[in-house]
Length: 610
Image (cartoon, rainbow, N blue to C red; front, side, top):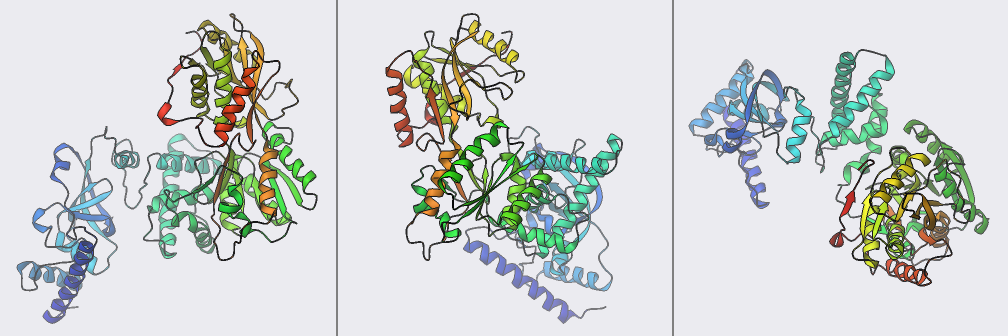
């Protein structure tokens, strides 16, 4: 088809209007609307790798390498120069060639951090953009930034580029380092579960599964209208895979439905404001969870625990369920158990929703997060609360205890009772509720009572009584006369008064043998569940016309009784219970923090045999 001069001129005018409009809009946002220029400084220190001839997506071409073309084209690659300029004449010539014969000569580009910058062929790229082409052939030279750069984008680039730095990137990009490695590991497991193969075959098959699944997801994702969101398509893909797996063979209708289910994940930026509740009085006035529940005291609740009824964590939550059954006989409460894998957890959570039709569903184990999130997205009429200690999920409601406050109280007791001022700390396990930050809280509690106290931490090599005795001996040899340590789940507890005990404080003999238990840290889940249900069933403030703040994140401490530290009597000093009561009151009223960042304490690290 041979285009007339008038048709070509009108096409240029349309393209120029689009470019000028783009520049005007960007200037209104205090941004430059001109074509981005690859900084010369990037080329000075970057190593070059020739990737050869390949088709590249036009949407991934960000700018130009030539400063002379920077002001001739807008940031959307549309022309800006007058229609009687030499540039305009050449642009129309390229358009005529494209319409009549098709463009065949590849452009030359630099690739830097997943984006392309045109070295030669700016007018061809401009015309192709004007014609809404998808991609075009290009000779690609990849620029490698300094490998030791602390920038997150550089780390992501090297992860995607592979060991030989030649792996194609195309549209695949993540905002965080480690995401590609995570997905590649999931792809490897998926491939291995289908058919055993050699290491090289599994690696290639995993790479194919990941890449082809992403391309299929990307098409469906954009078709669903998710284009201008504050996350990369790769991040959206990663979130999808964690919930639903790789969609390479998922039926199109199901794929589109799953993507729509994930809509809240895509629409909510990671930095979104979160409602974090640490006081039970906040539940009615701020949380307004009751606005999501039926206006009736006959609520139905379902508890889903991981493991067996006799396990430490399920048993601790069962105490809360049993209290609800005693105090709220009108409530319907169902209990379910699941294994630890995500597929079984999802099946059991879905079964709980279908059978019990709960007004509120408690997923009482952090390992259920992918399954609980999926259920929360698919069953948005059912509030789902996950028992997890994270900073706060942007979609899924969570609840947990501030175990640092119990550790702070035990640290204060240790500082008061130690004669040497050297305190031992054996890190606990998440399965019993102990968190890594508890160690700092323990140290700050000790220093609050004894400013010169020093804390030495040595981890267990195995969670056995014998391994614990070895660590006790090493702590005693280093001068520690008291130590905090986690319970061993296979060890019968002697203190039946507190079945939720997850850590304890014990004095040590000079040879490292434990001498006397002086305090324990314990869970009291019955306090949380009873307090929550009390607020949900009592008359609250007028909620008409006020939206519920959701998701919610409950972080209850010693002020609510969810976690606490208990002295084992008789104690060495009658003043110690009063001291801990004072600290408990200050913590509960927010007058002091269990782990204050401005008062960080240096903790010594030790090991067996040192």
